[in-house]
Image 1 (cartoon, helix red, strand yellow):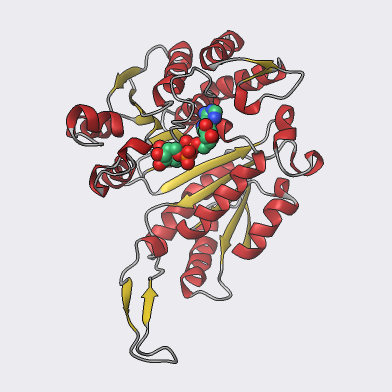
Image 2 (cartoon, helix red, strand yellow):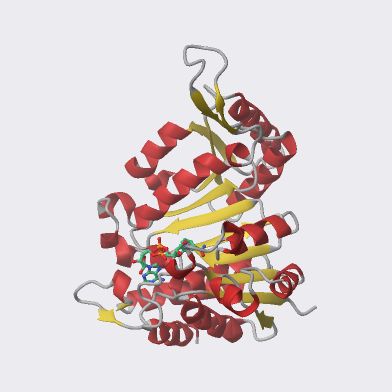
Length: 358
Ligand code: NAD
């Protein structure tokens, strides 16, 4: 059966980087049905909504979505429901995308881009799996009220609710174990079980799910220690699975270890394997239209799409190897340029990846 993907370029550099990723996809998987639709500010300008019904329908009917980026300062004054970023939230909600996968890979050729010493970080290859639809960001009750008891009675207090139900923990744990099986077979579950009841349940459920995966080595780590270990010896990790709040922080920390935002792909999956794939960076309005954006994070997102939603791991490997090859050849976009390498623009980087594939 022909696999269908929705391509949503979005705003800023979105269309420039997506163009290169689509060229690569067409080269490795010519039978893919590729349909494009507007999203974000571009869609608001055309249809008065950042996620028009036709775009949402296309996304729902596709096996996977390749997403560029949305946002521009010029939309900052719009009411919240019309801001470009609402498109991502709307897609996450409509498709039930609860699992966010963010690899942090530091190619040896880019080791100088990291703020850590090359001997600590060179060759880093970890995957952070963050639960995306639960936890303190969505728990109720929440709000700001006047405290009625305790030493601050009569003062205003803010409150939120951290909560996870067992099925939510179970489904993200399964994804974590399965991802570890496809990698080095190590899963580290990060929580704060020494202090939080939610984390105690998280840990208990992860241990139960582990019985289904005897081939994966499971460890547990408190989030404060995980934050330290990520900068002390990040290569010790393979896959990290954690909740929404801790994952938000740790995935940004891991991304910065690589020092090159233009290189980092991401994926958000639902229970049926349908997923949204996008670079970890934003729409970079400061460089939009100049042909200098780094398309590699988007090309690597397309590779993730082949691996996780389209059951084509071999094609994903080919793309990832081609990216590594162009780096070995010394080609760099401006964001990862260093003296002694060759500076190229967005399209020339796409050309080089296509050539490396052949
Ligand atoms: P950003 O990631 O867009 O840019 C941060 C810096 O990194 C800029 O200097 C930019 O030029 C550079 N950069 C980013 N991607 C690059 C690439 N591929 N190649 C070369 N350089 C690159 O973050 P920001 O400036 O904080 O946000 C800009 C807009 O993007 C905002 O409207 C924000 O809301 C939006 N945003 C969208 C997403 C998304 O679509 N998922 C994510 C983050 C931010």
